[in-house]
Image (cartoon, rainbow, N blue to C red; front, side):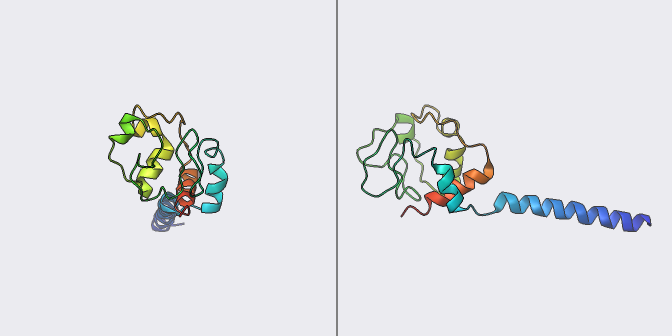
Length: 129
């Protein structure tokens, strides 16, 4: 094989790998898979309108809501003062590590390390309307 053919093949393979990596990072989450992952969160959080909060606030309608705004739940001072609105980016950051995002939060959950699972949980939270 000539050098130019080898270079072309290597370039094609490298571009394909980068393209696949970029797609994997930007792929939308799967809300069905997210509901399954969310089962570990359901120990502390309700997700049905009108149900009382548990250890954590009810997350029905959380997407697009201002943080620390669920009536009747006693949020930490740091979260109250964080001035966050729960966009997909902010939800992803929170689900990945609440204490990293808002030091001093009362939420003891360490976070989800899988980027795919984070996307899935955020997609699921967006269905709670």
